[in-house]
Image (cartoon, rainbow over all chains, first blue to last red):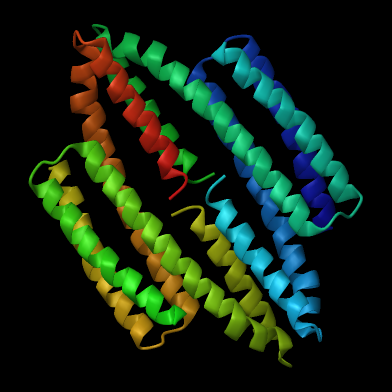
Length: 89
Length: 89
Length: 89
Length: 89
């Protein structure tokens, strides 16, 4: 199930960051630390993508097919915001 | 001290991800979860930036001022790789 | 009108890139050139965002409210693809 | 020569944006337009990368090996700024 997949990825990311923190405390090579952080970020992006995909296929469909134009507008605006912020974190 | 600042940010990120995982397990609103993941990404970027800055001011200066052209080339190439990957995580 | 706004931004970006190309041909300082390229990229992102927003408010609403589940799926998948690629250019 | 390679990529990007502008004026499908803009973004990133690589191998080496600590600091700070901005355009 996709939702559980995102939960698992977050759990893995937690352990990964704990490991990177220890690398840093033990004075590992800077570039190795940065590359491990980039690997966690890639995993977090995969989790975000899974959640966004679920969201499009549930809440967004419901809101766009629904009767309430304000709610529809709100849901579309949220997608724009997530898209915008994903580039600026 | 800057190094310790990066360690602290990673420690905070660990706790933050644990919290996001619980949000997801308790079926929080998708967009709220995605925005929290984006906040963690931003914190991880800050940690990477601190580490890269330390790296430029230590290893990179040493290698560029050193006698070994292979080592100098290696260190400059690593910066290019980190720059490249930072856009693709 | 929003569509025209995106056209104008692309027109400006064209002229901007021509200027950057001349800077480069006249051996301007590398960092100044890179910063100008980043300014064009920011302008192109604004144009993309305007177009995506139009798309959500027209084609996406039509497809999601429509009768054809294949078409709805196609349109949602396109949004996921655009989201994914926007991070990897 | 690498410098010329960056000039050529910018020239191609100019023509590409002109083509995208015409697509938009002729009401092409939004997603096709966005994907073409992403292709230009990717080409501009390649040009930036070439220029940054040249810069590391010339000005940065000169400054880091030079006698002036203020100049060295300025050059390293510029790299941090370019790295930071590259994620936020």
